[in-house]
Image (cartoon, rainbow over all chains, first blue to last red; front, side, top):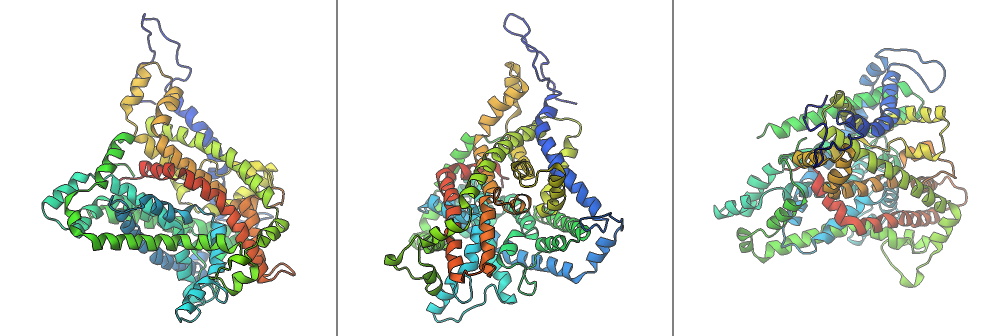
Length: 306
Length: 310
């Protein structure tokens, strides 16, 4: 029920009632959400509920499904591959998110300063990887980081360093993947952080510099606390993205070498391609719990410091 | 995630931006070295960000064997269109472009109409079921999209929609992030503005089209660019739902070509496939790059106008 009160019927200048609105205010919101709800229920909510039910069965794509209770969940919780995939994602998170926040903040602060020239060029340059198709980007990455023929090893050789097996050794594959992700998404984070910076009132800085605060001091005592919400938003956004990361390892490394880049997202896909749909479904809901828990943790962590 | 200030229509924001930009005293005394250092740092970083894309665009014109033997060199006399010629002969990239265009226009129109409209209802009306519905939207935001692929595929099979445009267009047409973002933006539109229109005899839908949409135009432009990008770049669902040659979108065509690099194709050596791959990647990213550079101001301002503030 609408709690806002407004004129139910509007009168014209001669007191003559205008046409009764064809869409009464109480009905309007339902009409407005209808097209969205139709698509959302048919192609998001229904498959989601289907997946939830699937996670309690041993269905393999055909035949009758047998109800197995929590078996899929307990199987995963005792499975090394599942924990390994979570650990891979956690390591990738550590390689990506802190670097991205620090680098993003640094670049955003610089781009927010009028004395820096060519600012619009930089904004475009940092966003170019973000807008380019992942498949194209991933292919470029595979070619550039090739051990024998790649441009990166070519550069290393120029300065007298030996070849590195960027995508073929388990110690380098994760950093290379993290680098791809950083390169692809940092521009977007810069713009989001920039929006936070621009909402800070300039007078705060003026007051601080009159009081003799150095620029570094201003950065730590004014800028960082005031953009904390924006930072939190970026961290949550990237946590979701890193733990769901699927396409990047799928195209670039296919999870190898030795499963070192089998992310949580890729692992659940592997369950599905093995035909083990019930386990795959359970895997995805466990992932939701992890992601939700982490998000809440970050929100709380970044909020209570006020 | 609510915004800290109640309302900030475009005008006040740009004024504030300018004020921050011409940040006075304090800094000027810091002098030249710091400014030069910052400038150099940004320039190096920007070049590093552009390098892989530029490298791919240039290398696509090099003879395939040279891409491999001399990845960093550039022999201007040897430039060739051979990679493009072979790539066009090998994969149906024209059909891919056409399919992508059809999906882009229809799916984009649905998203840009339905998302703000529903977000308007979520932001400015109170009705039973609102919070439940919006909560569900937030949950889907956290659910990895790949988990929905199997049930969606079964649904498509049941409807007889595999390898059709409907299958490419409808699922994901109104994505949760668009609703979430637009609700945030519309919540910032002052209620007084809407009530004034109501008093003037404006209908509920009229308020949306004549007041809300014009006010949120910067964010809407941002959503438009983001939507176009997402649709153009999507490949996981199209690979699953419409992989036939007739229905393959550009990204699907591209990813089938990528599988050749692992040596599945008989008679093609690594160098040839790499050359074709770079040609295909270049041709796929150039249209988007042009659209982005042409509209970047709207896109960046849209995000600046529409995200969470500090």
